[in-house]
Length: 116
Length: 114
Image (cartoon, each protein chain N blue to C red):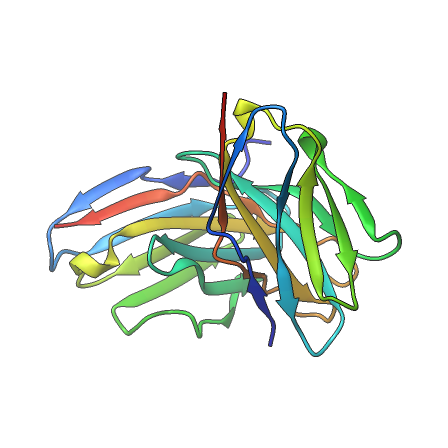
């Protein structure tokens, strides 16, 4: 398996622009997570999905952030409009079904976002 | 809700020396515990996990961790580190219920030098 795939790996944009980050989870995994990593705040869970349904979006910083999972093999995280404070590394992770399983999360390589 | 405290933000150590990275957690329910490693410019990968059973857990790359319920700790250890162990290490916890949400600590930067 190719693992969790994220694109783009690097994104540089200007303040006010729309940014879309993409994630392809590992095939067969039921859970998908979006994290943000910054020096100041560490690793923060933004939102997670189970079977394509958002379960917990309490970590989404504000209305400028939105996430979708239209099918089991694709998810997007959108920031509109972007601001310099959104600069961070965004990770996507997927996990097999819980209910007694190990619940290990498999992380993608991340997207480094820079908002100028 | 759970929380994780990693007491050391940075740990410098010489190659071939032993190392311990500390992790304490807080939770009102039973938990599963994890250690993840992040190499530069990469995503996180699982080092080891505690689910149940023996409190001493062995992981990849010669790392091990011991679950101590009374002290609510899950410290990571390696008897002899290598330069290639230089990375960021994250402790994480989740409850044993149906929720899949992991709570991560702030990370410990392990810097191994000659």
